[in-house]
Length: 231
Image (cartoon, rainbow, N blue to C red; front, side, top):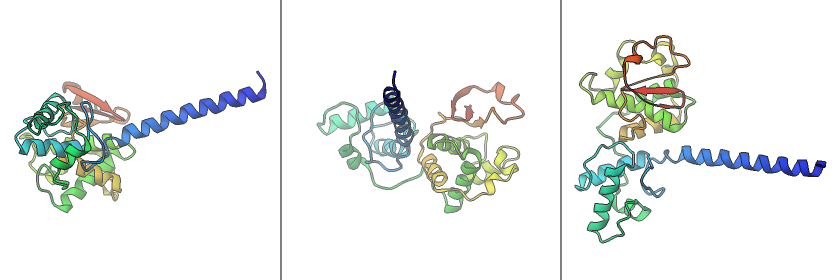
């Protein structure tokens, strides 16, 4: 094999590696959409835009599942009912036209929060999940939102975050850092109902956690990036 052939093989390898990186970036960015109508949606997709559309379908009486931003069977059935009602092809896909007909074009929250509460949530996300992909950042925010809605925890964001010993970023000062735009967007996404944590109430990083006894008694839901999520 001469030098020219080796160079060509090297270029092909570099091209394939670059293609894989681009595809991975597109997969991560797929859940970053905060407003409906920016991409077509189908079963298996997820995102904040889907959470907003689920709420619209629920408000119109088509959907009775969780507002979680996950395109599962109930969402697909709701979309088909909507399509059938308007004499559309009942393929269960949310194309751009359907999204625009459903969307109120407002980034609504599951409940009303102040700017201060939004920024508090963003600070915790920034402190706990800085460096994770967007989905992982939203999952951390979703855990806090899930706690607000559960009777075992305080009923507002500030009090959930302020509970003693719950978030390491409060103890090491990471939560005092100003959140970047991605952290703020992740907070907004969590507040729409997008929940990559799958209704988790706890999370931890096994690489840095020093006491795992408490989490070993809880059902593990999944791992996203560096965090394990549990109920």
